[in-house]
Amino acid sequence: MIKVGIFGATGRIGKLLIESLGNDNEAKLSCVFVRNELQYSIPEGVLVTNDIKVFLESSDLIIDFSSPEATKILLDCAIDNCHKPIVIGTTGLNDMQKDLMLAASLKMPILYATNMSRGIIVLNQISKIVASTLKESDIEIVEIHHNLKKDSPSGTALNLANTCAKARGLDLNKIRISGRDGAIGERSKDEIAVMSLRGGDVVGRHTIGFYMDGEYIELTHNATSRMTFAKGAINVGKWLVKQSAGLYSIEDALSM
Ligand code: NAD
Image (cartoon, rainbow, N blue to C red):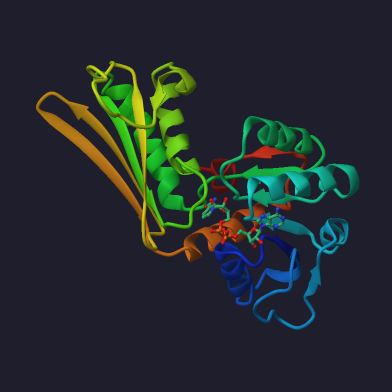
């Protein structure tokens, strides 16, 4: 059995990871890291700690769904103390935190995915084909998430935009816009807008549109349950524990 430690265990995804591991034949929950008291009961025999070093030592695999600041603390400790495979699902990492992840991946296997669903991987692959085939199309992305989401745009939307920009040989940082307001003039040819809506309990919807004269394609992915992300993370974690040090994507794990 793979002993799994959960970082961000009291969060929306963390709780589902605990639930999902309760029904798994290959992996079991060994440890949870918490800053404060857990608000709910966890299975007997599971270590609850606020000491990251102890947390790392008690697990064969770490799954992180927390916050960018927390992921940084986790990676700092892992680099200095204990090189364990880590699946990172936390979104909104800045460049410094991504560099830290890269540095950590020289010492341990790390899989980073801003979306653990298989549907989004396929959407990403289709978007690459459409962006490079329909070169004249205007690309616009709209995402909606629940009102508690902290980062914007979503990591998934940024990833889709990046895929399309790369497919056209463009640098997303130079062409992405996140809103339109006022007398801003006509749309420039290469720009890609990534718009964020927030409301209610929406788990996550991403629509990528390719707009042309006389026709358009809109592709939409809807996440209807957060369990998709929890199960996806556990699934790729089982693959990650067999890998050597390096930085992996979800496509690597699923051979897609
Ligand atoms: P949440 O706010 O419900 O939970 C966050 C968890 O992280 C909590 O347990 C909290 O205590 C912990 N945490 C936050 N800051 C911390 C710190 N400084 N030190 C230690 N622990 C800390 O959030 P959520 O909805 O569970 O999402 C968590 C992250 O996962 C977010 O970044 C979210 O965008 C991302 N997410 C990723 C996917 C994916 O498929 N990759 C899917 C959904 C959410």
